[in-house]
Image (cartoon, rainbow, N blue to C red):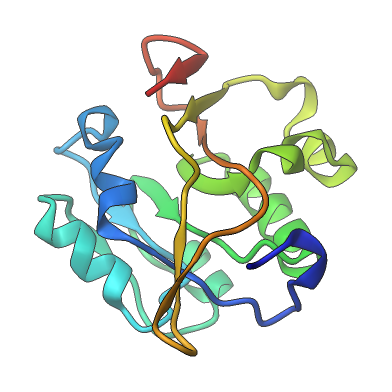
Length: 164
């Protein structure tokens, strides 16, 4: 079982297609999405199978964020503090719409608060059950001990907090 304390800089867990299917009706279909954390490419394939126009590449995530043409960032980013802190600061600098999966406690962290001052334009989608992930190292589903939510920015959802 994964815990936030057990994650290392190279934490790598993949998102199940069902996790994105749960919020499919909140994703505008006329937009181009990017997943900057390519992994094995399965997330992009899953999103395409769900009818989402998503791109990405097996490059450093910053190369993708700052050099690709897209409308919305859609990803399950690494949760380890070192990578996540840098990623959140980059998201803030870009000021583009996004949906990221994060442990809910991360929104109370100093680095999240610093990145998104006063939570302006932040919306949260709370899943009906705990999100589980796929561990590519042993092909078993990883059921974390922490609760994750979809953190959204500039998506103009019908409510700031949505319970699925």
